[in-house]
Image (cartoon, rainbow, N blue to C red; front, side, top):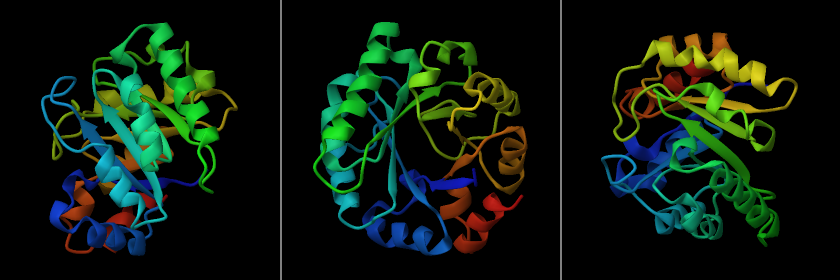
Length: 225
């Protein structure tokens, strides 16, 4: 599987999101990463489903939505209706039954949507202090695992190299399944290579892409083997 680059709009200009999405699309990014925060699960508040709906109207790129919220199950229908292609939430939010129900709701809702974009994929994310073994009960139900290499909540943090060591464990858990293993937090050309070499096949980057004077070069540097 080739490396998928998912620029985080958390670092974009919110007054010019359509323009900034077009810029990364032209630079070769395949997905758009949308960080949703509620001020409870993480200490920051960002955007909700109405903004995702607006983004859907201006791009055909995959909308890769990361829910950093306390009760994702409650809001999954809103994000499905808004046009999300991937909905990822955190394994830390509830017990096994809650996690499985949320995954099933994402997948069922995605199959039933009436547009032409196909099924919605379900992902689980783990915080830096969460062991990858926490994913084991769900790994066969997932399309994506997101490894956080910073504490979620704010962009521009430094990469935690010890968190990247979870990647090979998740690769082993997945076996032959076509799982997307995504990494988010402090990603640049150097840390991106570390993650790719460990087995990651999707990279989320915010500041490195959007604060770069050459966005195309930034995206390209994350894809290079």
